[in-house]
Image (cartoon, rainbow over all chains, first blue to last red):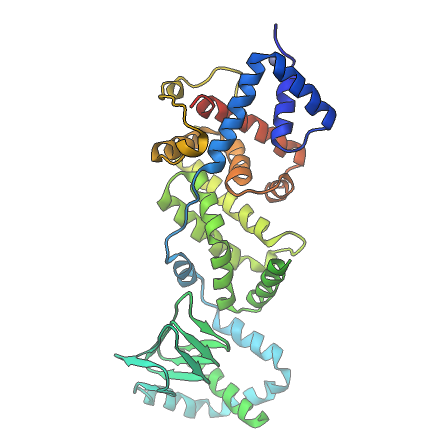
Length: 200
Length: 189
Ligand SMILES: [Zn+2]
């Protein structure tokens, strides 16, 4: 004799944790008397146990760093536009800056030497500034013509001019992180600094 | 609740352009997204590619994220769709029209040796891990995604319905069929 399909549906409702008490009672009663269904039910439970206990896997350790490295860089103009929108009062300053672009261009090309604004709690190696694991730098860091690798913590802004920043997944910067590799960035950087100085 | 607040705060920062805030989001969800892709694709290398791509897509499209949905659901949706796309490219005609049919089991699997250890003990063995994964890979993709989300990612029917944008009833039916199909491969072990 073939058992009603309803029995198997109840088994699944039971496994979903979504069965009416009456149905559960009927299911139990049926299973007590029907070895075929009881076997079916046991093999379902076993299957669920197998897939549930399948061991969790973890992605490789450099997963986050790889994702971050592949993110598209923000477009310079988008960034500048957003900055301007957030600082409407300062739009006038850009006019002023436009007048000084000539001189900025000269400094952009002139400054080719590696320099870093702090030597405290950092390691300097081959034009790369390293904030080691466990170390904390208090204050802003500006690196020119070199790169920075942050494994520890920086309480302030990080600016890299003509270079690159590497942020280890454990590394932390409380302020803004900025890379300046284009004239356009360089101009904005100077405007922001000029304006900041004006406001302070 | 704290987790939700943490995520909301970070999403806002990312939408404002703070890339570093995204690193923390990736850290938070990478295990789950990777696991989802691995179980869907059955291969570490492809899973890593798919999981990375899912995070990059989520970042690029962060402005389209609607906070009415859980962020994790949105992320899992991207990862599931990506995995399904990859599956389709890999095996263009193998799963698409395959239905789980009545009672005939797959003879390949009935040849596997059986043993009497409890599931917990047996699952320790790598072979069984393999067998479980291969059984999941035999599932047509529509059953595979619900089974992976429910059992590998431990999500509720409600969340699965949100992720796949399907009515709960459909999710249930697919889980039931998926379980029946897996039972034929694993139930006798
Ligand atoms: Zn029966």
